[in-house]
Image (cartoon, rainbow, N blue to C red; front, side, top):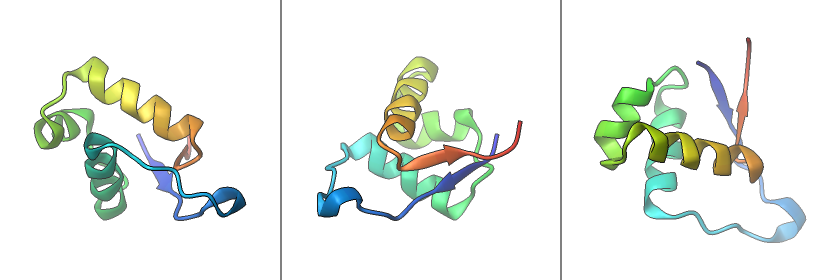
Length: 68
């Protein structure tokens, strides 16, 4: 899995991320190929919790899936 982490602010409104989302974004910025298991370890979330936060980050436009 490869994601592009975006550092943009849409309409000059900063969207506040929760602590887990901040950890995920920072981990993905450091390593765009980070695995779900690593994100689980860093956040203390379950796989479904990580996936839920990834979906939220995608919906907010903070990350973007690259590749297939």
